[in-house]
Image (cartoon, rainbow, N blue to C red; front, top):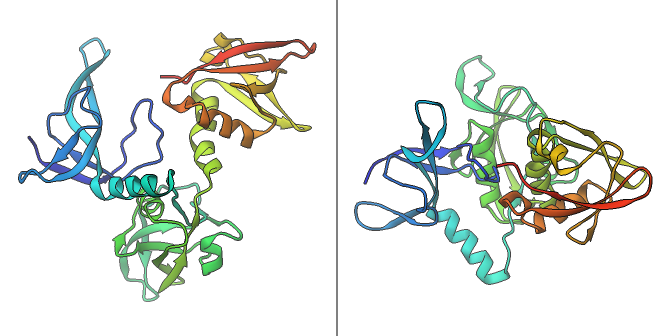
Length: 292
């Protein structure tokens, strides 16, 4: 039993793929093992699915498994949309706008009208991907997006959550500010490219948590650097090796790497077998596992 203490939360969870951000935050008692269980209101009606908790630390700084009194759940509306698509088509398709931020802020950009009056906050468009939905609709760099389909947008994770919850080819209404004037633009969404999901999650995992840096050179994926403090070094990866296969799938560029690791459930903790070619031409199989 507890109360809803926040909506649209963006927690950082261990071992998670950080692509969903629209969590319900509660102070209800949720403990390890409750993930996947229902979150119900006082009338017994389902409102979400529990997926994560905030855990405390003991006096010696060791992370404990018990709840720190904060838990997170995926809203029912998102679950219903996903389940319906899986039943109907066997997979989930997500909307894609085709914009990125300016790299300086996650959002909360102040908006002023052409009279200099503060009118709210939004997210600043840094780049528009050519040929994608935003480009076709006329959204431009330096536009400030403040609302999508009635949802107030002040942070990038809110924008991403609203857009990816919509289906490809559906139309959304985007309210934005440009040169002090508010515009309302209809946008027909593109489909979220699966390789973008893999890139967003896997590339930082390899570089920041496993210490493995790769480069595409002459049609091959070459290990360009290995940090000795991290797991890739302990697994036997060395600079100059060429990655040829992952779990039997041929790999020769970033895109094929993302696909192979994604299909192998690498991000969910499953180890993968990586065939590498040494500079002397010899091949060996290494085991790569996601950092936990």
